Amino acid sequence: MAKKKVTKKKAAVHVEPDFLESVSRNFDKAAALTKYPRGLLAQIKACNSVYQMRFPVKIGNEYHVIEAYRAQHSQHRNPTKGGIRFSQKVNQDEVVALATLMTYKCAIVDVPFGGAKGGVKISPRAYNPEQLERITRRYTMELIRKNFIGPGIDVPAPDYGTGGREMAWILDTYSTIKGGLNAAGCVTGKPVSQHGIRGRTEATGRGVYYGIREFCSNADDMKKLGLTPGMAGKTMAIQGLGNVGSHTGLISQNEGDVKIVCVAEYEGAIYKEDGIDMAKLLKYRKQRGTILKYPGSTTLKSRKDVLTVKCDILVPAALENQINMSNAHKVKAKIVAEAANGPVTSAAEDVLLKKGIVVIPDMYINAGGVTVSYFEWLKNLSHMRFGRMEKRFDQNTYHNIVNMVEKVTGKSITKKEKGMIVRGADEVDLVRSGLEETMVTSFNQIREIHKRRKSVKDLRSAAFISALDKISSDYLALGIFP
Ligand code: NAD
Image 1 (cartoon, rainbow, N blue to C red):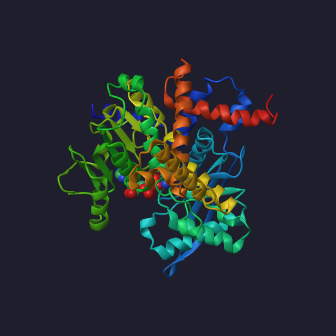
Image 2: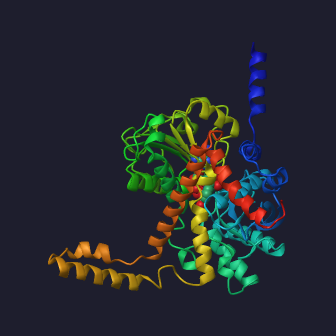
Image 3: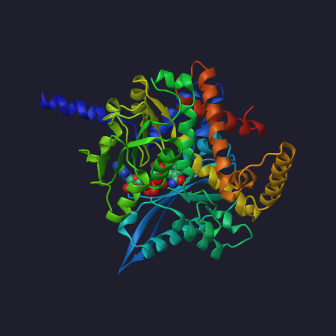
């Protein structure tokens, strides 16, 4: 009896696809629904180049040999683009899977880049800032040496374990060695003071919010899930309170009136039926280093339980393969918004779809980061802040219009009301507007494919087809594939 159980368990482990296999399977599933030539599909699927490196960095009195990667999945558009991950779990397949997703992500949101990704196999917690700086600068030197970085070649950005600080180190290293008029465009996600753009830090989380909001706005889709349209009052659970998870939570709560009932971090998961105030929780964690014992909350048995609590919207915002064959059957959320890359394995997705759960796929829902990175890159190449030319002009024009209307009607509005109407757009207003437009338009393209084509049963396949249509037209325009 015991033997049988083990065999069963082993078989279950065996059928679980790894991250790269999941991406590959998902691609094949969607590609089979298209009529593109097989050679073209093979070219779109293949990863063009991977640079694997090992370099020594002096840590204390000894040298650590650091393993790192940069994968460029596709150069059908240039430069290539994608974040850099610092994690002990980094490996070549993971980096390739992430670079692959970047290609489709950029196409879905009409950002004119090919996909790339970098990974450094370290646990950032194991090093102090000075050591991390040394590792980051050395990694950048390797990228420069092999021509794997540059504003027109390959442009990194933050990902798991990295942020503005690391991007500033990359920029400084690149500028010192290579220089050039457009050097600032060699990396995005930089601090605003270091050629960054306002609104980039929260862009991925904000994009996740816009994407969920757009899905929830359709009455028919929501009715199928037994939910009312709109986000207000919906319950949400979030795994991971890093850059993406924390901003998704804050913005969903503040702008969507969503109730965050459960969150998980490394140290565990907490639940609070009447809602967790995200701003207070983040402050609490900053002060105490933990989310546990947050006032009014109960601690769940395991941090993994966040994935299976009862809620309307589940936001996995940590790492890949979190919802897999071991827990997919226990997921109770009605909508899973893949804020992280690859949090649901392809096998687990089949289980979720059978249960009638909607999965909003990573390559669409977390594309807000690369969208605003594109704006940052454009800002760097144009050498000018967005809004600088038109802000005052717009402001004066609106002022004249309001004055005219007041004069004609003989009625006047308050100073506060006037202030709201006549305001010209700042950089952050334009970034948010561009991001919202991108997330709404891209979702409607995906929804259209999902609705129009009966053979397309899920949003991920629809998103893949949206990407394939756009990437194929680039290749077909070149006349390479008849
Ligand atoms: P981050 O390093 O800022 O945050 C990740 C958080 O998840 C950390 O606080 C970590 O402690 C927590 N975590 C890790 N494992 C956990 C677990 N098992 N349970 C609970 N918490 C856990 O990383 P990030 O930038 O927010 O990225 C998160 C995911 O979003 C990644 O998959 C990344 O590829 C994806 N993503 C990030 C961006 C971006 O702009 N940063 C853009 C698109 C996609």
